[in-house]
Length: 305
Image 1 (cartoon, rainbow, N blue to C red):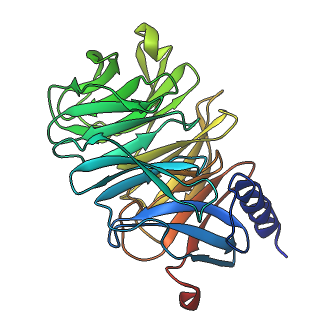
Image 2: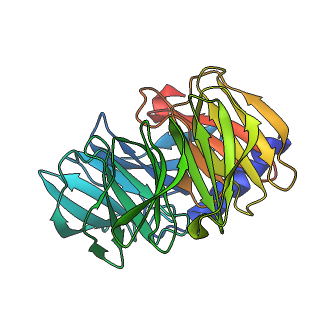
């Protein structure tokens, strides 16, 4: 057996330990499929993984927390917190009206908070502590967003730049024409500018730190941070590749060529796995960002392998 498969099996087993339930076999994570309007588990191990039966259906939009224990979902104009503890015992809790134009929900790395984004309206709300906060208004369409465990939301506003929403108030952090992706780790924030073709870092982003250019990047569509906070992966749509940077030296240390065009980088399960083709048709494409960097796919059904 190849070393990469052993590594991935260990990762999948570790991820499965975070989920309780009666589904037979390891569960590596759960994903919302917009074409089905359903949340489905990913079952099995690399080389033999498939999508399980829907756990929640009839959804207009949903996002599962990195720990797999709950999701924020919209259905028929209402927002719900869906408990996924036990996997088979799905429970729903109404948390308020779904905001107009809702099109994305982004979770913090520790799964304690979620940003509820209405991109076209330039509005962001925060779900934290079981409650949804009033909207934070931004001066334009939201292109990208990230949130930390304290509920601070970093938002890329089209034609304006990077804004930080804290307690319902927005503050401009960095002028950028197109903030295409954002990642937060510790006290640092990383962003890509799709127009300028730059990867940038802001140290101490909550304290008005300055943005510095780390590297030139082509058509950046997503950012992923390793669990130990030492490496950053940039997904490129035009070059169909993932480039990994060492955050201590800002040097590119690895490039992985892809056989598909990535559309983003969404935390899939824990700190090691990221979904690279959010909303795309076909198999799920997952990035493993741990000691090794690999990409593998999960087919839509067991019979599609």
